[in-house]
Amino acid sequence: DTRERGVSLVEVLVTMALMSIVLSLGVPELGGLIADSRMVANVNDLVRDASAARSEAIKRGGRVTLCTSNNGATCVALGDWALGWIAWVDTNGNAAVDHGEQIVRVHGPAGGEVGMVGTVAIVGYVSFTGTGEPRTSAGAIQTGSVKVCDGRAGNVGKQIALLASGSIRSAEGVACP
Image 1 (cartoon, rainbow, N blue to C red):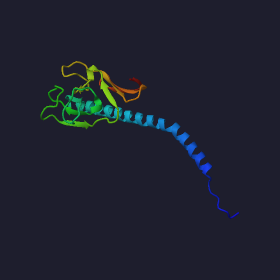
Image 2 (cartoon, helix red, strand yellow):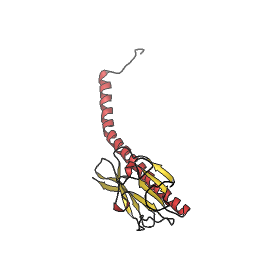
Image 3 (cartoon, helix red, strand yellow):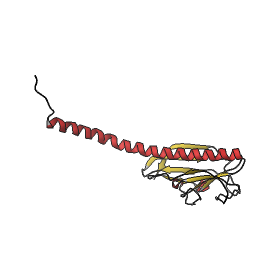
Image 4 (cartoon, one colour):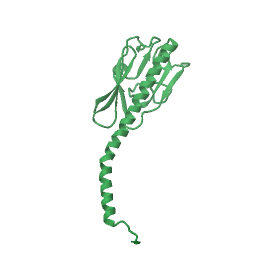
């Protein structure tokens, strides 16, 4: 049979209907996957930079501080690490970037709907001594956590915990509003 054979309108409509059903099932999962990926990336960035600040403090034998920053040059006391952060060699240990103190790391804003809020002890800064211990500018041990959430509710959040030893841990399944 040399007759050309095409596709009927009914076949095209049925195929399109099936494709739309399959896509509607997969697209919400894709959105969640993208949101999870964004949160994990921000958690990994903060863990990496805090670990690097601790290593730098040990290497130099002096204090290196990490703080929230929205401009890459000074600290802001707003407590949301999603604004961005900087790490610097805090030669006088006052948890403020002073003239002549070297900034060693800069991270921009998290982006999206990601919020990264620290507990009271690490709401705005974390400072590592030359031995790698996290201590406030007054000398008290600094421990706490940063909760990372986005616009979703449920146990979808992440958490970064700072231990008294200076070790940093991350966890998943944290309740978000």
